[in-house]
Amino acid sequence: MTSANRPQLSFLREQLSEMEAKGLHSRLRVLEGEQLPVADFDGKEVINLSSNNYLGLATHKALRRAAIEAIRRWGVGAGAVRTIAGTMRPHMELESQIARFKGTEACVVFQSGFTANAGTVAALLGKDDLIISDELNHASIIDGCRLSKAAIQVYRHADAADCERICRETSSFAGKKLLITDGVFSMDGDVAPLPALCDLAEKYNCIMMVDDAHASGVFGRNGRGTVDHFDCHGRVDIEVGTLSKAIGAMGGYVCGSAELIDFLHHRARPFLFSTGHPPSVVATCQAAFTLLDSPEGERRIRKLWSNAKFFQRLLRKLGFSTGRTQSPITPIHVGEAAKAQEFSRRLFDAGVFITAVGYPTVPEGKARLRAIVTATHKRADLERATQILTEVGRGLGIIAA
Image (cartoon, rainbow, N blue to C red):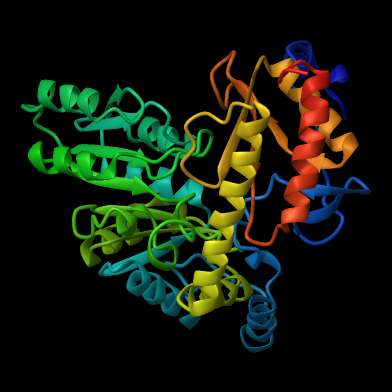
């Protein structure tokens, strides 16, 4: 069945055609093997600069062994939602391990980082409450804010002074107040002014929440995130992280007080109505956190940062605009979405895979390619990638010839 013979769905073709005309339409690239720094997508070997596999753990032998052993012992699925019969011993062990790693009382694991954010905000806030949110917060935060039906005030990106203006203007607000930010912003790679925001949360009696999806495994001691990086322990009420990026597997988590986690067990809808993680995924995550807290984990994080800084220096020297990044996320600013898509296509044909990002993920006129270097890239990979970026970028007029 197609929308052609279902007039109720004719709007789909119209909207897809509009996306194509604006250069916003793309098709999924298919990975034909493992998630590696040089990988096979659509039958073509390319330097892979589009993965969130920061530390290369998605293919690590210790994580593979843990997954296989868990399947043998526990089977392939949890079989039920966590609140009925789907909480297995490994789930509880992983949550305790993450809580210790983050230095909090307790933790709950969600099926994704998206549901961790959206489910937590929607559970904690209601129509009589207020959310104060950075204008570039992740879509999962935005959706959680909307689902909560709370009033929403948005402050200028990473601008503590503008955030204080809103806090001051709403200081007499009678309901609960939540101040929420990404730790590392996924499209620009910059870092939130967390200490200043914690100051404001304390001064104006706000719940402080940080989404550390792109900081987990990257910032702080052994990858403990921005809360650790800025030494804000005890000042952030809710810490969200992901198991899908540097950890190498799948899922999200929320850390905080024991009462917070108990409350989420009862009120966070994604937790209440989704089957628990398969034991193999849980065991993989346990192995990843064990590795992070080891000398090898430290080495991989150092290599990640070394590679990222090397790549970013090369790009800037060649004339590419990488914006305000402070992390291994490297935006390559292009401007128009159609040109960004064409840049990405030509790079792929030449042997480099970097995804184009346009509206609505970023504002119109601010399209970019978003490159992410990993700990497992070799310097030769990065040098070859910048050579190809230069040749293609000059051909499109993105940098000077």
